[in-house]
Amino acid sequence: MSETMKAVRLHAFGGPEMLRYEDAPKPEPKAGGVLVRVQAAGLNPPDWYLRNGYRSLPPEWQPHPMFPLILGSDISGIVESVGEGATGFSPGDEVYAMVRFPTDVMEGSKAYAEYVNVPASELAPKPKGIAPEQAAAAPMSLLTAWQFLIDLGHEEPNPFQPVPHVPVPLAGKTVLVNGAGGGVGHLAVQLARWKGARVIAVASGKHEALMRDLGADQFIDYKKTSADTVIRDVDLVFDTVGGKPASRFLKTIRRGGALFLAFPLGFDAQDDAERLGITVSSTQVRSSGAQLKEAAPLLDAGTVRVVIDSTYPLAEAALAHARAEQGSIQGKIVLTVA
Image: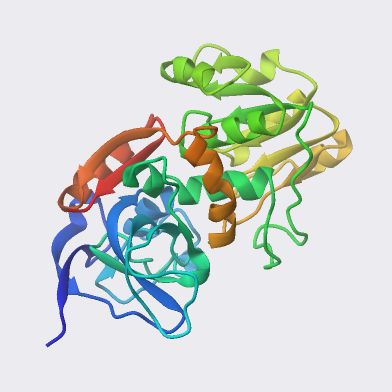
């Protein structure tokens, strides 16, 4: 009889109430992989998109997984055992990772559990200066901001455009981050500042003190002022919200500047951008242990700080998803695993 573990599983698509905390088979270490005992798991938008069955996508793109499935991709934890051929890690090592993303995005990457198998190439040593909860909150949001702003780090085809996404030099430039209070946004603000940019943060007023603390040079409360009415001649807009409304930012960008879209679906102003001499670009975040290792010293030193909105025990994952549905998240939501 195989060993079991506690996990949060989904037996059918639906609301937060569909998440069940129950016994599940404990995974065995796979060739090239590392079995990690999870200490914390971070929540990300793909988690609730999958829970709902990606209903916002065209029917032909919607998933048809084998239930039950385990959601979640971001983890921090301790190496339990190492599979055949996996190198660089030993039992007892503290690690963090974004697990099998986007390759398993439609099937569940299995992070909401006591144990998860992680390809060794996707793991990195956990920064020593931060708690497991902060480490688990970082991977997807940090890698998204990193791959948009610092280094793409891979040569996989871009699902959103025919050419690879290319980050632009940030030193001495002015960067506007829309959705700056969220998971990706608050890290993008800090990475842009680290690279020497002047940063304009756009978010709701509740985030202003945090944005100032994280180094934003200017703050705009979008509920009071529309940034496109007061900002001109920025070098880069990184819109972490994206979609059709992102077109309004074209008027804020100088000729030769760029608009980066975390969510490009629905954006329909490409012709306008070309006429204005503005590059519009997007990319799909991908797992990378090498980039998490590269970013770790920034987290360790506090140069980049991961903000936690709230934490919930693994058994209360449904409540964590309900919190996510309320919106206005400051930073990240995290599940803690006993």
